[in-house]
Amino acid sequence: MNNKHRMRMVPLCLILAACSGGGVSVSQTAAPPARAEDAGNHPTPPVVVDSSSPAGETQPPVSLFQGGATTVRFALKAGNTTAACGAQLSDIGLSHASAKLTEGLIYVHDVALIAENGQEVPLELDQHSPWQYLNLALLDFAGGSCKTAIPLGDTPIDGSNQQVVGNVPSGNYTGLSFKVGVPISAKAADGSLIGLNHQAAHSAPHPILGVYWVMWEWQSGHRFMRIDLAPNGGVKRADGSNEAKWAFHLGSTDCRPNRNTPGGYLCGKPNRFKVAFQRFNPNEQQVTLDIRQLFADNDISRDDSDDAGCKSNVTDQQCRPIFQQLGLRLDDSSANSKDGGLQIGSAKAFRLEKLGT
Image (cartoon, rainbow, N blue to C red):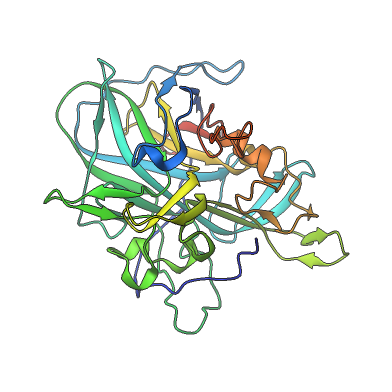
């Protein structure tokens, strides 16, 4: 299950920067799971949000958002420290390790604002943004993935991106929802269906789907999240050796050829999930993924499994606590249940923060 085989990326020039954030909690529960990606582009069950805050913390009221031009800002942090390229992060995981961020990329799709009546109104993404295509956006918090050496024939990513931009109709909006991952497909403006997740880099319909660092050849798709850390002192292995990085790669697994699916593959474990906030105003708040929370029950200073970190392998025990932080079921709950890779609970690693914090 090594992630040694990589695909080359389409020449591309992108932009990204880390952002910051300080805390409304997210709470979500899922309906009983359906069969993996058999549900087509809607493998994620409905999410119920609640407005509870972190223990002992009272949140100020959030005003209504009136719609129109909209920018949803995102941040990657370790506690209150912004996780930019090469940033020194502390107190990570069970060993309270210090580490530098070397990769920080996330795909998000189906971004929507929640109206007063509870209806989710899709954000119509600005197709002029180089970071957005149809209903999909790529966030890169590591400024071009922190690359200092580029494999022959591949093109580096320039810059960073921390936001999703678009429009919603005028109205009264109280909340936000979005999904993490690359959809199987999405509709183009002319109504045609475009395959997204399972596209080779050399034939990707848009540059954000041909990015070298998030292609995933062994699963014939993309990494939905890639958070790689370089702990001080490295990662100790069972054989006494050291790895430089401890990596988390989330993506669909158990993928097999299927000629009836856009892109030609169907995956038994989708590993996409939805995040929703009951109270959100894009003019006042940003969405933060907290690395400390994500890896709270992992020791990033050592790893005795085949992979140094978690590559969404259902047999890798390092993946189990991370998937729990994202509200995902790692593997099937029982024989023939086919519920592995579905959302079952809260994405606790995400929170809301006031802009500028």
